[in-house]
Amino acid sequence: MNRRKIIIAGGGTGGHIFPAIAIAQAIKKITPDTDFLFIGAKGKMEMEKVPQAGFRIEGLDIAGFNRSALYKNFGLPIKIIKSFIQVRRIFKTYQPDAVIGVGGYSSFPVLRWAQRKGIPTFIHESNSIAGRANIMLGKKATEVFVATEGMEKYFPAEVVRHTGNPVRDAIAGANIGREEGVVKFGLDPFKKTIFCVGGSLGARSINESIDAGLTQLLQQDIQVIWQTGKPYAEKGRNAAKGIRGISVHEFITEMQFAYAAADLVISRAGAMAISEICVAGKPAVFVPFPHAAEDHQTINALTLEKKHAAVIVPDNQTKATLVPVIIALLKDSTRLETMKNNAAALAVRDADEKIATLIIKKLDELKK
Image (cartoon, rainbow, N blue to C red; front, side, top):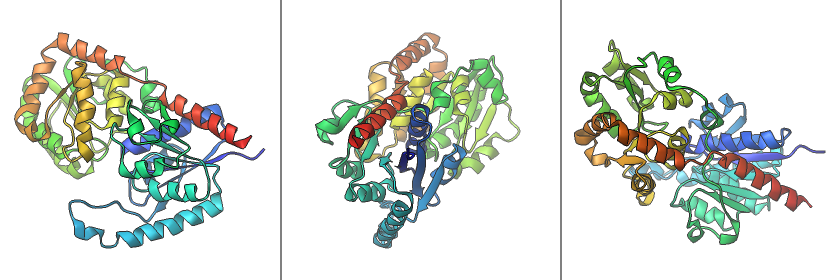
């Protein structure tokens, strides 16, 4: 019997890459002989993170539309044409049985080519507001996996499957105590600890606010685990140099330890970040990215705030209010416990298994 071969396309941020890896791992658990090839964008983080997870990846010479500097889009048509040529070559060599798209601009030419060739395509849409590329691709998709209700306004109702967002098994299956997590970062188990993360690429407003408020936090006996992202890494390291109670990292690979250590998480409000925080069962302060399409991060965060599982600090108010909000929350143990329980109640722990099962079932049906 020939091994089933599946391409997984997309990336750009951890919010696309880690769900893709989670889906691949879940399919492997059910059908271990399945072969995977990931396709991403050259120079992006998937080219590093996917091989670290044990999967092969090929990169496309492609870039997304730059809304802040329009002149940088001059060569975009050429890159898109080149990416389709590269995709055609990959398909001719690899001959996939199915293609899964997880978002990010590198997924578009891959799924579009698959649909032209009549190859089954599956889409994972993590957000409550679908991306334009996914909306276009969804019209011909075999199935679309979504995390929120009402996504039928973006995709044909007959292909929509409500599964939730897949969370990395290292986080979903973690059994790590708070003390073990704190010690992992060389901190004091007897002090309150916050975990600040702006996503895999960092968040300027969160980074600048934490940087400016470090002294104030330390004076309150609050420790900081700080994932800065690459752009702020040097500044973060300089700010923490020689100071106890601060653990600075450009990127944290073993996020399960950071979540375990945290009494409070400070984060952007991407769909995948929220899913991880709920699975970890942590109270959170969200600073939604203000330039997200249709302000979907604020919509994401409001869902949790309305259920008393999180607090929102608007991006333009972080310097004035983020640190005071953190300090006030850490002094209110009753409220923190309520937020923790409410966040955990929203967790979906088996989304990867649901998606994997549905993909395998559909491919088996199509094969008959």
